[in-house]
Image 1 (tube, rainbow over the protein chains, first blue to last red):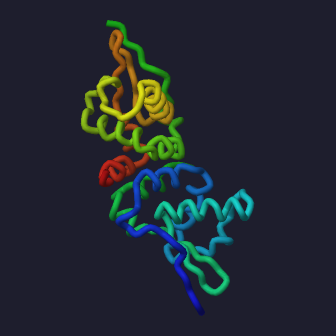
Image 2 (image 1 turned 90 degrees about the vertical axis):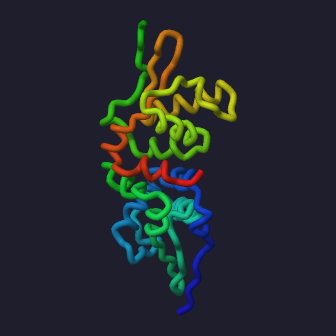
Image 3 (image 1 turned 120 degrees about the horizontal axis):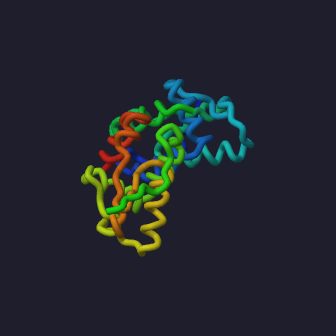
Length: 103
Length: 103
């Protein structure tokens, strides 16, 4: 099965402002919470969200381009994985602090 | 000398999305970095920023209303203090992670 990684910044090119902006939106934060519970990755369409497919795609793209998640294809599916190692390395504690917040 | 605390959310009313949005802007992040180095507080006008006075005031208000900083008057001066205890209590590690980021 062919697989392809969608464009994303290298670790060194991730900017904290972009990460914070990406995380500071309720639906995107919900996506991140789901991904944090599934380190093996989640098929993008399987995340329950109160938005349309195009809005979902937009939010996933914003998170990907900020460096928060990585998306690859598996055949016709798109699977997203939280870039936990990269974020924990760059900003130790940030993601844990965000995920600790009550919903 | 009379002193007054400007309106700000109680700790219980601080929302993580608002904090992340407030932090995810370069000038506001610069303000937070300066405040983090001065736990005793900083006179708002003393923070060196590449923006106009009105933009500065707007950014300080955004940070205050999100619960990131507290501002009180001392006579004719306004002094801002990072709400580090509140943020560390609500989102352990978040602020440290953000401040660790290279500039």
